[in-house]
Length: 361
Ligand code: GLY
Image (cartoon, rainbow, N blue to C red):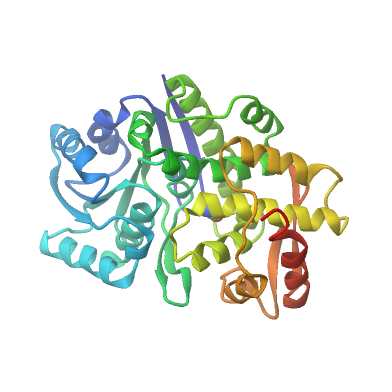
Protein backbone atom coordinates (compact mmCIF):
# COMPACT_ATOMS: atom_id res chain seq x y z
CA UNK A 1 0.00 0.00 0.00
CA UNK A 2 2.39 2.67 -1.26
CA UNK A 3 1.67 5.70 -3.41
CA UNK A 4 4.37 7.70 -5.17
CA UNK A 5 3.72 11.25 -6.26
CA UNK A 6 6.26 12.78 -8.62
CA UNK A 7 6.95 16.49 -8.06
CA UNK A 8 8.44 18.33 -11.03
CA UNK A 9 9.39 21.72 -9.65
CA UNK A 10 11.44 24.05 -11.83
CA UNK A 11 14.62 23.47 -9.83
CA UNK A 12 14.29 19.71 -9.18
CA UNK A 13 12.09 16.66 -9.73
CA UNK A 14 11.63 14.14 -6.92
CA UNK A 15 9.35 11.46 -5.53
CA UNK A 16 7.11 11.72 -2.49
CA UNK A 17 6.61 8.16 -1.25
CA UNK A 18 3.57 7.67 1.01
CA UNK A 19 3.04 4.24 2.53
CA UNK A 20 3.10 1.85 5.43
CA UNK A 21 6.50 0.70 6.70
CA UNK A 22 8.38 2.78 4.11
CA UNK A 23 10.66 4.17 6.84
CA UNK A 24 12.51 0.85 6.74
CA UNK A 25 13.12 1.34 2.99
CA UNK A 26 14.63 4.81 3.50
CA UNK A 27 18.24 3.81 2.82
CA UNK A 28 17.54 2.03 -0.45
CA UNK A 29 15.18 4.73 -1.64
CA UNK A 30 17.67 7.46 -0.71
CA UNK A 31 20.40 5.66 -2.65
CA UNK A 32 18.12 5.66 -5.69
CA UNK A 33 17.31 9.36 -5.34
CA UNK A 34 20.61 11.07 -4.54
CA UNK A 35 24.33 10.67 -4.70
CA UNK A 36 25.55 10.42 -1.10
CA UNK A 37 28.05 8.53 1.01
CA UNK A 38 26.97 9.92 4.38
CA UNK A 39 23.67 10.89 5.94
CA UNK A 40 23.21 13.36 8.80
CA UNK A 41 19.86 12.94 10.54
CA UNK A 42 18.26 15.94 12.23
CA UNK A 43 15.48 15.05 14.63
CA UNK A 44 13.95 16.38 17.85
CA UNK A 45 13.48 15.27 21.43
CA UNK A 46 9.96 13.92 20.73
CA UNK A 47 10.65 12.00 17.54
CA UNK A 48 14.22 10.86 18.17
CA UNK A 49 13.40 8.38 20.94
CA UNK A 50 10.71 6.81 18.73
CA UNK A 51 12.27 6.63 15.26
CA UNK A 52 15.93 7.70 15.21
CA UNK A 53 17.42 4.21 15.73
CA UNK A 54 15.16 2.71 13.06
CA UNK A 55 16.08 5.49 10.65
CA UNK A 56 19.82 5.09 11.22
CA UNK A 57 19.48 1.29 10.80
CA UNK A 58 17.70 1.75 7.48
CA UNK A 59 20.40 4.16 6.25
CA UNK A 60 23.30 2.00 7.46
CA UNK A 61 21.76 -1.12 5.90
CA UNK A 62 22.11 0.69 2.56
CA UNK A 63 25.82 1.33 3.21
CA UNK A 64 25.62 4.98 4.28
CA UNK A 65 27.76 6.42 7.06
CA UNK A 66 25.47 8.09 9.59
CA UNK A 67 25.52 10.73 12.28
CA UNK A 68 22.73 12.71 13.91
CA UNK A 69 21.64 15.58 16.10
CA UNK A 70 18.59 15.72 18.35
CA UNK A 71 17.33 19.26 18.96
CA UNK A 72 14.71 20.36 21.51
CA UNK A 73 11.15 19.94 20.19
CA UNK A 74 8.86 22.89 19.51
CA UNK A 75 8.38 25.98 17.36
CA UNK A 76 10.07 28.14 20.01
CA UNK A 77 13.34 26.38 19.18
CA UNK A 78 13.11 27.09 15.43
CA UNK A 79 15.59 29.87 15.98
CA UNK A 80 19.07 31.04 15.05
CA UNK A 81 20.79 29.34 18.00
CA UNK A 82 19.34 25.89 17.26
CA UNK A 83 20.04 26.41 13.56
CA UNK A 84 23.64 27.34 14.44
CA UNK A 85 24.07 24.22 16.56
CA UNK A 86 22.90 22.06 13.64
CA UNK A 87 25.43 23.68 11.29
CA UNK A 88 28.25 23.30 13.83
CA UNK A 89 27.38 19.61 14.28
CA UNK A 90 27.37 19.11 10.50
CA UNK A 91 30.85 20.63 10.29
CA UNK A 92 32.09 18.61 13.30
CA UNK A 93 30.87 15.41 11.62
CA UNK A 94 32.86 16.34 8.52
CA UNK A 95 29.90 16.54 6.16
CA UNK A 96 30.82 17.35 2.57
CA UNK A 97 28.89 18.18 -0.59
CA UNK A 98 28.44 14.42 -1.01
CA UNK A 99 26.50 14.22 2.24
CA UNK A 100 22.75 14.37 2.65
CA UNK A 101 20.72 15.85 5.49
CA UNK A 102 17.76 13.71 6.56
CA UNK A 103 15.00 15.71 8.31
CA UNK A 104 13.17 13.28 10.61
CA UNK A 105 10.22 14.90 12.33
CA UNK A 106 7.45 17.46 11.97
CA UNK A 107 7.37 20.84 10.29
CA UNK A 108 9.81 22.54 12.64
CA UNK A 109 12.52 19.93 12.09
CA UNK A 110 11.85 19.87 8.34
CA UNK A 111 12.06 23.67 8.01
CA UNK A 112 15.21 24.00 10.11
CA UNK A 113 17.07 20.94 8.73
CA UNK A 114 16.12 22.00 5.21
CA UNK A 115 17.53 25.48 5.80
CA UNK A 116 20.71 23.97 7.29
CA UNK A 117 21.09 21.85 4.13
CA UNK A 118 20.44 24.91 1.95
CA UNK A 119 23.12 26.91 3.79
CA UNK A 120 25.90 24.40 4.53
CA UNK A 121 28.64 24.70 1.91
CA UNK A 122 26.15 26.84 -0.04
CA UNK A 123 23.76 23.95 -0.35
CA UNK A 124 23.77 20.17 0.01
CA UNK A 125 21.00 17.62 -0.52
CA UNK A 126 18.11 17.09 1.86
CA UNK A 127 15.67 14.21 2.23
CA UNK A 128 12.48 14.89 4.15
CA UNK A 129 11.05 12.17 6.41
CA UNK A 130 7.91 13.79 7.86
CA UNK A 131 6.36 12.17 10.94
CA UNK A 132 3.38 14.48 11.51
CA UNK A 133 0.30 14.89 9.35
CA UNK A 134 1.05 18.58 8.89
CA UNK A 135 4.56 17.87 7.62
CA UNK A 136 3.34 15.05 5.34
CA UNK A 137 0.59 17.05 3.64
CA UNK A 138 2.33 20.39 3.50
CA UNK A 139 5.72 21.43 4.85
CA UNK A 140 7.87 18.52 3.63
CA UNK A 141 6.81 19.12 0.02
CA UNK A 142 7.65 22.18 -2.05
CA UNK A 143 11.07 23.21 -0.79
CA UNK A 144 10.30 26.01 1.65
CA UNK A 145 12.80 26.07 4.52
CA UNK A 146 13.09 28.66 7.28
CA UNK A 147 13.65 29.70 10.85
CA UNK A 148 11.84 32.34 12.91
CA UNK A 149 13.09 35.73 14.14
CA UNK A 150 11.74 37.85 17.00
CA UNK A 151 10.10 39.97 14.31
CA UNK A 152 8.13 37.10 12.79
CA UNK A 153 7.73 33.51 11.71
CA UNK A 154 9.77 32.05 8.83
CA UNK A 155 11.45 35.41 8.17
CA UNK A 156 14.80 33.84 7.19
CA UNK A 157 15.05 30.86 4.90
CA UNK A 158 15.63 29.52 1.42
CA UNK A 159 13.99 27.42 -1.23
CA UNK A 160 15.56 23.96 -1.40
CA UNK A 161 13.55 21.17 -2.95
CA UNK A 162 14.23 17.83 -1.26
CA UNK A 163 15.73 14.99 -3.28
CA UNK A 164 13.14 12.62 -1.84
CA UNK A 165 10.26 12.63 0.66
CA UNK A 166 9.41 9.44 2.54
CA UNK A 167 6.16 9.58 4.55
CA UNK A 168 5.43 6.49 6.61
CA UNK A 169 1.82 6.90 7.77
CA UNK A 170 2.39 4.42 10.61
CA UNK A 171 4.33 7.20 12.39
CA UNK A 172 1.05 9.13 12.64
CA UNK A 173 -0.26 6.56 15.11
CA UNK A 174 2.22 7.70 17.77
CA UNK A 175 1.10 11.35 17.61
CA UNK A 176 -0.94 12.92 20.37
CA UNK A 177 -4.49 13.57 19.13
CA UNK A 178 -3.98 17.32 19.18
CA UNK A 179 -0.85 17.09 17.03
CA UNK A 180 -2.57 14.80 14.53
CA UNK A 181 -5.58 17.12 14.35
CA UNK A 182 -3.24 20.07 13.75
CA UNK A 183 -2.41 18.64 10.31
CA UNK A 184 -6.09 18.58 9.45
CA UNK A 185 -5.99 22.39 9.34
CA UNK A 186 -3.82 22.22 6.21
CA UNK A 187 -5.91 19.32 4.86
CA UNK A 188 -9.07 21.43 5.24
CA UNK A 189 -7.28 24.31 3.48
CA UNK A 190 -6.35 22.08 0.52
CA UNK A 191 -9.92 20.75 0.31
CA UNK A 192 -11.35 24.29 0.25
CA UNK A 193 -8.80 25.40 -2.35
CA UNK A 194 -8.98 22.52 -4.75
CA UNK A 195 -11.02 19.46 -3.95
CA UNK A 196 -14.78 19.30 -3.46
CA UNK A 197 -14.66 15.48 -3.20
CA UNK A 198 -12.07 15.61 -0.40
CA UNK A 199 -14.17 18.32 1.28
CA UNK A 200 -17.27 16.11 1.21
CA UNK A 201 -15.46 12.98 2.33
CA UNK A 202 -13.83 14.75 5.30
CA UNK A 203 -17.21 16.15 6.33
CA UNK A 204 -18.71 12.67 6.21
CA UNK A 205 -15.86 10.76 7.84
CA UNK A 206 -13.21 12.86 9.56
CA UNK A 207 -9.75 11.33 9.53
CA UNK A 208 -8.21 10.22 12.84
CA UNK A 209 -4.82 8.75 13.67
CA UNK A 210 -6.63 5.42 14.08
CA UNK A 211 -8.17 5.50 10.58
CA UNK A 212 -7.35 2.56 8.29
CA UNK A 213 -3.83 2.76 6.87
CA UNK A 214 -5.37 2.84 3.38
CA UNK A 215 -7.42 5.94 4.31
CA UNK A 216 -4.34 7.64 5.75
CA UNK A 217 -2.28 6.87 2.65
CA UNK A 218 -5.07 8.05 0.36
CA UNK A 219 -5.68 11.37 2.13
CA UNK A 220 -1.95 12.16 2.50
CA UNK A 221 -1.30 11.27 -1.15
CA UNK A 222 -4.26 13.36 -2.34
CA UNK A 223 -3.02 16.37 -0.39
CA UNK A 224 0.51 15.94 -1.70
CA UNK A 225 -0.88 15.81 -5.24
CA UNK A 226 -2.82 19.05 -4.68
CA UNK A 227 0.32 20.76 -3.41
CA UNK A 228 2.42 19.19 -6.19
CA UNK A 229 0.21 20.74 -8.86
CA UNK A 230 0.69 24.18 -7.35
CA UNK A 231 4.46 23.83 -6.79
CA UNK A 232 5.00 22.48 -10.32
CA UNK A 233 3.29 25.57 -11.71
CA UNK A 234 4.89 28.15 -9.40
CA UNK A 235 7.83 26.98 -7.31
CA UNK A 236 8.85 30.45 -6.09
CA UNK A 237 5.43 31.75 -5.04
CA UNK A 238 5.20 34.44 -7.71
CA UNK A 239 1.49 33.78 -8.27
CA UNK A 240 -0.49 30.55 -7.90
CA UNK A 241 1.51 29.29 -4.90
CA UNK A 242 0.31 32.32 -2.92
CA UNK A 243 -3.08 30.61 -2.80
CA UNK A 244 -1.54 28.06 -0.39
CA UNK A 245 -1.39 30.94 2.08
CA UNK A 246 -5.17 30.78 2.46
CA UNK A 247 -5.96 31.45 6.13
CA UNK A 248 -2.31 32.19 6.93
CA UNK A 249 -2.33 36.00 7.34
CA UNK A 250 -4.79 35.86 10.23
CA UNK A 251 -3.51 32.38 11.20
CA UNK A 252 0.12 33.47 11.64
CA UNK A 253 -1.04 36.46 13.70
CA UNK A 254 -3.08 34.22 16.02
CA UNK A 255 -0.16 31.79 16.25
CA UNK A 256 2.28 34.56 17.20
CA UNK A 257 -0.19 36.09 19.65
CA UNK A 258 -0.50 32.70 21.37
CA UNK A 259 3.28 32.62 21.81
CA UNK A 260 3.25 29.58 19.48
CA UNK A 261 1.36 27.55 22.07
CA UNK A 262 -1.47 27.01 19.56
CA UNK A 263 -0.50 24.69 16.68
CA UNK A 264 0.02 26.08 13.18
CA UNK A 265 -2.79 23.97 11.71
CA UNK A 266 -5.22 25.12 14.40
CA UNK A 267 -4.33 28.72 13.55
CA UNK A 268 -4.72 28.13 9.79
CA UNK A 269 -8.18 26.68 10.50
CA UNK A 270 -9.08 29.80 12.48
CA UNK A 271 -7.71 32.07 9.75
CA UNK A 272 -9.60 30.14 7.06
CA UNK A 273 -12.91 30.53 8.90
CA UNK A 274 -12.36 34.17 9.90
CA UNK A 275 -11.36 35.36 6.43
CA UNK A 276 -14.19 33.46 4.73
CA UNK A 277 -16.81 34.82 7.13
CA UNK A 278 -15.55 38.34 6.41
CA UNK A 279 -15.30 37.99 2.64
CA UNK A 280 -18.76 36.43 2.46
CA UNK A 281 -20.21 39.42 4.26
CA UNK A 282 -18.38 41.68 1.78
CA UNK A 283 -19.97 39.79 -1.12
CA UNK A 284 -16.63 38.37 -2.36
CA UNK A 285 -17.58 34.81 -1.41
CA UNK A 286 -20.69 32.90 -2.50
CA UNK A 287 -23.44 32.81 0.13
CA UNK A 288 -23.29 29.79 2.44
CA UNK A 289 -19.60 29.00 1.86
CA UNK A 290 -18.45 30.35 5.24
CA UNK A 291 -20.91 28.12 7.05
CA UNK A 292 -19.77 25.07 5.05
CA UNK A 293 -16.12 25.85 5.75
CA UNK A 294 -16.87 26.24 9.47
CA UNK A 295 -18.67 22.87 9.50
CA UNK A 296 -15.71 21.19 7.80
CA UNK A 297 -13.23 22.73 10.25
CA UNK A 298 -15.34 21.92 13.32
CA UNK A 299 -15.84 18.32 12.10
CA UNK A 300 -12.05 17.87 12.17
CA UNK A 301 -12.01 18.98 15.83
CA UNK A 302 -10.47 22.35 15.01
CA UNK A 303 -11.41 25.85 16.25
CA UNK A 304 -13.35 28.21 13.99
CA UNK A 305 -12.70 31.53 15.72
CA UNK A 306 -10.37 33.42 18.03
CA UNK A 307 -10.64 35.87 20.89
CA UNK A 308 -7.28 37.50 20.09
CA UNK A 309 -7.99 41.28 20.00
CA UNK A 310 -8.45 42.74 16.53
CA UNK A 311 -5.64 45.29 16.87
CA UNK A 312 -3.22 42.53 17.92
CA UNK A 313 -4.05 40.55 14.77
CA UNK A 314 -3.61 43.62 12.56
CA UNK A 315 -0.34 44.51 14.24
CA UNK A 316 1.14 41.02 13.74
CA UNK A 317 -0.10 40.94 10.14
CA UNK A 318 1.75 44.14 9.33
CA UNK A 319 5.02 42.27 10.01
CA UNK A 320 4.03 39.22 7.97
CA UNK A 321 5.94 38.26 4.81
CA UNK A 322 2.68 38.49 2.90
CA UNK A 323 2.64 42.24 3.49
CA UNK A 324 3.22 44.20 0.30
CA UNK A 325 3.79 47.96 0.45
CA UNK A 326 0.94 49.47 2.40
CA UNK A 327 -1.27 46.38 2.36
CA UNK A 328 -1.43 42.60 2.45
CA UNK A 329 -2.09 39.94 -0.17
CA UNK A 330 -5.11 38.00 0.96
CA UNK A 331 -6.36 34.71 -0.43
CA UNK A 332 -10.12 34.95 -0.90
CA UNK A 333 -12.34 31.90 -1.37
CA UNK A 334 -14.93 32.52 -4.09
CA UNK A 335 -16.42 29.08 -3.63
CA UNK A 336 -15.11 25.65 -2.66
CA UNK A 337 -12.47 24.87 -5.32
CA UNK A 338 -12.16 28.49 -6.47
CA UNK A 339 -10.10 31.30 -4.94
CA UNK A 340 -8.27 34.48 -5.89
CA UNK A 341 -5.57 36.75 -4.51
CA UNK A 342 -6.68 40.24 -3.53
CA UNK A 343 -4.39 43.02 -2.45
CA UNK A 344 -6.08 44.88 0.40
CA UNK A 345 -4.89 47.99 2.23
CA UNK A 346 -4.13 47.71 5.95
CA UNK A 347 -7.34 49.66 6.60
CA UNK A 348 -9.37 47.16 4.57
CA UNK A 349 -7.57 44.33 6.33
CA UNK A 350 -8.48 45.79 9.72
CA UNK A 351 -12.13 45.88 8.56
CA UNK A 352 -11.90 42.22 7.45
CA UNK A 353 -10.54 41.25 10.86
CA UNK A 354 -13.42 43.11 12.51
CA UNK A 355 -15.99 41.38 10.31
CA UNK A 356 -14.55 37.87 10.60
CA UNK A 357 -12.76 37.43 13.93
CA UNK A 358 -14.26 37.16 17.38
CA UNK A 359 -17.71 36.60 15.92
CA UNK A 360 -18.34 33.23 17.58
CA UNK A 361 -15.83 33.55 20.41
N1 GLY B 1 2.83 26.04 3.05
C1 GLY B 1 2.61 26.78 1.88
C2 GLY B 1 3.64 26.56 0.83
O1 GLY B 1 4.46 25.67 0.93
O2 GLY B 1 3.67 27.29 -0.11
